[in-house]
Length: 494
Ligand code: AMP
Ligand code: ZN
Image (tube, rainbow, N blue to C red; front, side, top):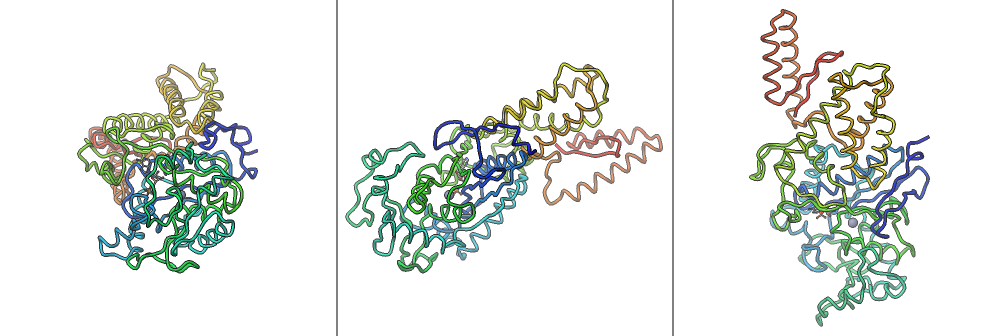
């Protein structure tokens, strides 16, 4: 029996505005699509938070025994400056400013994205498709929508007819907006505007001569609209209806609303069973964003090179900081919050490492491991409530410390359950790492510490305890803890 069969998972569905019992479309399988980055600049920590929320969700599904096909795309064309309907492509603009080929820009920032995610210990998605790799599929969907008369062509561009769609469908159902209100609140179309209504959105845009990212189509040379790529790639890899679609809260409207409209217009049914939206990371109370300059790069946190930071923080500490908030809550980044997370991270890892050394006894304890374990699952089953899970894990930390001090006892069976459960939640589900990532130098550092461990052992064997203690204490002062265990001495970095 797989674990998911014994757990009842509830998920907040943005489409219904309620927590719903999760039931996958195909027993034991989950199809999940998450809107990926537009690769025209370095990912900031805010972007990372959204992707990390879905990495945690992916990890929990896998932990429960589901077979997950997780598709997270790379937007490498079609996303215009200011998320606008007209104007320059974000990638083409960067290419123009830096005198690069657009695909050089794409390559540079895709590599950066992957490097950062790897530092944060993300699991790779099952498929990572690109918009430019799916132009043909996008053109096919446009043809289909045109045939069904929910779109119209104008001067080499194709627009989705929102007003017509809304007569038989509900445009705005995800974001809770009404088309009439939207129309009342927008400017009147200028005479030269190609759209019939300001709410209409582009499926295909004619490329002006200066627009270098262009492809041939039945409507002439052009490029696909931003919303269309996600419909094309999710349908191709997950089918016309799939389990989960995720993204940042800021993508709910218009991006996801348009995705629903496109899929309903072409397939005739709603594409997604559960819509999940991750909340924003803020700094100084304001949304972290590339455009406003209110952002911090992960690399600046790993090196401490930013004025708001008093020191460097490891990727796992930053991950722990993120996991201390529920994914649907706003989270504010500050040096103090990171310092507090570092302490918590250290206490948790320390307690976890201690389990191995706990002496077992037959005495029963007040701390019921089995019900504690279920409470951990209950937290995650309640819409992936990682802050409650972490609070539960700290109940176990307290218990471990009491046993270590001789004030509590644990049976061999409970010790094993405790260790397996914490191992599963800390490493598999939350994706934390016991050892701080020290980047490219980690192998060298490991070699140096191994050498010091050997010298310490030699000193001890020669009963030179002054030297062996000096090695241990001075390493500890540098944040490198040595731990003596049955299998020899290991180390961890904080
Ligand atoms: P973009 O590359 O601009 O398309 O954004 C990539 C992802 O990052 C989207 O899912 C956004 O919702 C998300 N995002 C952007 N800013 C933030 C933020 N401050 N906090 C959390 N997620 C964000
Ligand atoms: Zn998308």
